[in-house]
Length: 346
Ligand SMILES: *Cc1c(COP(=O)(O)O)cnc(C)c1O
Image (cartoon, rainbow, N blue to C red; front, top):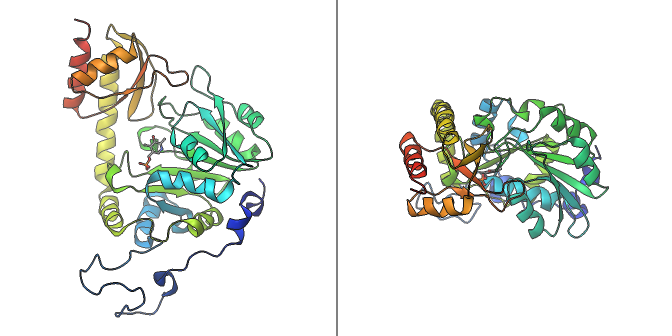
């Protein structure tokens, strides 16, 4: 791996972060806060939230078995995807490499930041090799994006290839684990100590059932997290989100129950969809959705919309022609989907 100084944009490496009132006051017990030009009325929302979200990070660290200092919290994974571009990629000079197909936000952030986005097509099992990605990389490649379980394909990527890449790539490897709770494999969080160039992304939006509060997590070395903290908006995670996330992590058992129900429902729904006449191929999944190739994705998509059931049409995505991506819903919702599909073309 190159040094972090070599990987970080010079302006970012050298800058001093904005120091907020709440950053500067630390330690001594205080009851009178006259430092941040807040309104003394309208508690508790009159006060700026903790810019580093320590109470929440402590709880997350416990559940994820990492140190609070290895956690960055952002306004959705969106922020945790965007910040590495801003921290490490010189616009118009550096590039990133990613698998194709995958989650669309990596490319959107690359383009927003004027960073070249190099796609490497997956094979027909939706897998990649480290060698292929390394061949696409050059001396200006700062980041490689992996997503496992991958979206929209649903499958886990091969662990050995991910490890190869972590060992051999000189830059940072971002492994997006938004769907890890639905997979039987263990998270790359356990390997943070072994790979100093690893960034793992997770989110409150899927298994945690909290897409509305916008909370994304990045896990990495203290040094990488410190760089992300330096360039983030000071109060990037608002107080309502911090409070609700704290409430949610304290009810982690409920999350586990949801995951169990969704996985059971996934097995049943996939079996029934596989048996439909319109189904051509159903792909194995490790996420809370699955990809299915059908006779005519565009027409079936529009038919389902008319029935009030919305799925994701992935027909125009690489390797996904005539594919629909279907999220696992409640048993009632899944039944509605099935009934509609059974009546298609009648
Ligand atoms: C849904 C999803 C996310 C979550 O994004 P948030 O901004 O945290 O809601 C992240 N990565 C992938 C691959 C996803 O599919």
